[in-house]
Image 1: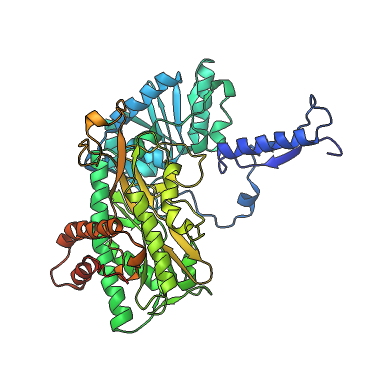
Image 2: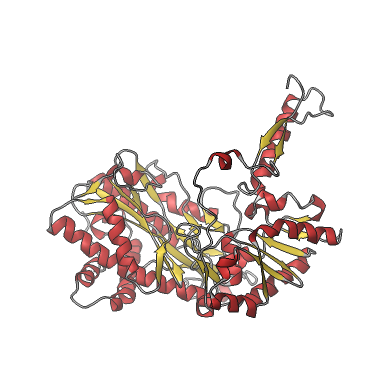
Length: 538
């Protein structure tokens, strides 16, 4: 301020998002107004310097930095994708016409994997995506990536059949600039919330269409084949969990030994790996014993001071999932293999009531996710408690375990409406810092409510107010893993909630039991876990 010169803020444009750069520039502008002596002469207090031609500071001191990953793509076949590359491109081109744009640019890796019906393993931990960019115009479709990624013959043939041009990864910015230079009326459709600043900054504001891209809604609303793959993934995931829980109960109760959080992770992953089509976990497993369960994004590590061992005296919160060729899973269960306290049981039950509250909702179309969040929190709010995270996030179909644009949370700024075919998590929780954590998470698919008025408890047509063409939606369960019944305080459960639990366990048993051998420890565990709950109240 003293010498009136603007600060230069160095930024690697390939590392930071375009939306972050905008937030930074907006913050600079607000700060300038705050110190302005004349409202008509606002000083520029800072500018972004993208350090063109120079390495960023971290790169210059990073010794033995690994090269950019170039693991090969694999084809994601039509039986799982349900929509051809050509049809997806056609949808994007329809959007280009509507937006009066001439080029669509995609930088988010899950958008690119979805568009080209390819997946990859190894570039990004636990995410089946490869490092690349993509562009679509009315004449061309281009994939920008390392040539090693498209070297497998089937991948090359797959892309060639869809008329996809493959270019070097580093060419994308120059090609965007060339497209704009070829005609001053050309416009680029780029979702700044899903792009880095390197691409965004070369597009003049007059030539930029900054709006949700065409892939986001396509990817969010799963088609029939994608949803069938998601259902199958959750059934085999249920079988893996049955094997794991039979093992865990035997180790803790029969053998009387303690099991480390790391061993829990390794054994559970091992059982998932035995299921057909398993590729890798969908995120690093959270296995938190006792107080570690209250650390929402905890990750156990051998040799850590935080590492704990599970025995009969403490609960364990396990949040885990798998990436299968045909679907993605994410589930949280909280288990206690000893005698839980009354306080723990009450909080467990209230979390379960919140889960059921969301699961059983019927809501009109065009309802944003934040509207449903209160039903997850109602029971714990009644005793003046809460949890500090969202209730639900979108999940990809054999893609990223966290996927937008929708969500269920108190953050009312996300006004994306819930739609048929979307998948969301439902994961209320409670965390007693230093003691324990509880979370119960299922994945749900959004379906239309059956039109049968009587089945839905509606009044006869001649007695109800007519709502023109309004559709209603509800949830159907994807996760097929039992909920521990002896942790439930049935005195604070309603009959309807107990009916829900029995019906859920009946569905779990029907779908998972065919994958288990009769008389096996896993089958015995499933049979016991899916029995109807004892309803004798105090």
